[in-house]
Image (cartoon, rainbow, N blue to C red; front, top):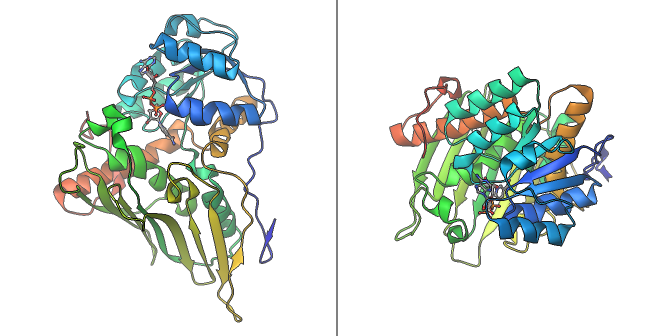
Length: 366
Ligand SMILES: NC(=O)c1ccc[n+]([C@@H]2O[C@H](COP(=O)([O-])OP(=O)(O)OC[C@H]3O[C@@H](n4cnc5c(N)ncnc54)[C@H](O)[C@@H]3O)[C@@H](O)[C@H]2O)c1
């Protein structure tokens, strides 16, 4: 579509070679609400599934027409029809299961966070590289319509030099639906703002410093932080701010993004969270820095859930086909995890942190 003279497109093309067999491990909420709907729309082929909760696996297979329910992880990994293992299990278990899949020679799409601590994530990335398999992380917000189109506008110079970028989310999140998150000592950045930090790296590149403040709501039942502000400082004048509150009881809940440059501005809403839990398509408007001032509205069509979930899997399949790197490949994802851990270190030590300081000695977060 044409937006004030710039070519933008929020559709997510399926991979050219789309017939790799996918084996799902974990058949819970997100697989049923997002992965499987996006894969069906993209013409992808799910050949088997496994969950340690057998009923969850059987139900998922029944409802989505998956031909085989594996009786164990070994059974799924031994299946020659499975080329890609799509992991959607609780993150504490992910490194061990991913390591088994790598050892079985399978390519992998892992969930975010890749691991709870940085060292375990770095080990997985190294293991996949040594085994010659592709590992991608399901940071699908890069394909969410508002972020994808904002990136296209940045790349075409529509915003000029960026100075001020914001993601502001104030919502009421039912953490009790994920008891393992509600009990976690780390919540907001590790499970939620990780999407925004990855999207900001996609939009802006690598920041030089991270400064974070973490808080809680009075009387919140969750263990970890649920209110955070993360400031990313870049070379030059650019700052990006991620400001998130998960205990907003009011009817003023919102989820929006804004990129201000010297040549133009983008503002938009994140439809999934602005209208939680139903979700809707994002909005995005662009105003060039020229008279007469007016907003140009993008006619977006795709949603974060489920549509954007085609992106990481399609990119992984393209990387297998071309022996390239997936857009959200493991090595790239370590950059996002460095921002996550830099934010926790900054909040704990009440000082700014250079993400390059985050290395394999980052503290475990269990
Ligand atoms: N937008 C996103 O990217 C997004 C959204 C939601 C959840 N997630 C991630 O997806 C993962 C799953 O989340 P969910 O909301 O579906 O959780 P869920 O609790 O609904 O489902 C998890 C499923 O995994 C199964 N499981 C757990 N450990 C297992 C193991 N070792 N072997 C086999 N099965 C196992 C459980 O039985 C359960 O059915 C988490 O890592 C979460 O962080 C990502």
